[in-house]
Amino acid sequence: MKTKWSKTLSLALICSLSVPVAAIADNLFAGTNAKWKAECGSCHVAYPAQLLPTSSWQRMMKGLDKHFGTDASVDTSTAAEIGAFLEKHAGSKRGIAGETTMRVSETAWFEREHRKVDAATWKNIKVKSAANCAACHTAAEAGDYRERGIRIPQQEITR
Image (cartoon, rainbow, N blue to C red):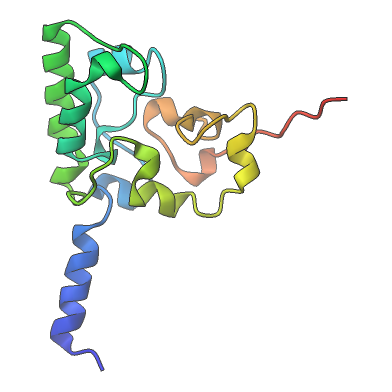
């Protein structure tokens, strides 16, 4: 039988591993920066800073010359501005300090939110991978990942 103390400790542990506060209620993410949006958003959705902890963003910014197989280097001033923005809004300041990955698609939050997505969806030519948020989240560019904005692309049938 659990004691009141163990229930409280369990709840505290669960809360400490939770997603950013802004994301818990409705999957809306706050915080924007023009350089972050332009630079990161030029190749993929500019992922909300809250989805990774500070340590992940720091590692990512230090390795832009090898950014998932691509050279995404930016000038020193731009890197400093984007890095400061990401650190200010990072999820580690809002409860996901335990994450160590640099891929949003490998976080506990992402896996929990996408646990019911059929494997065929990830292989859909219109989706291609879990990193392509905008394929299903129609308002991802605005930081809106709410369910009402989800449209799973239909697989094209070839004849």
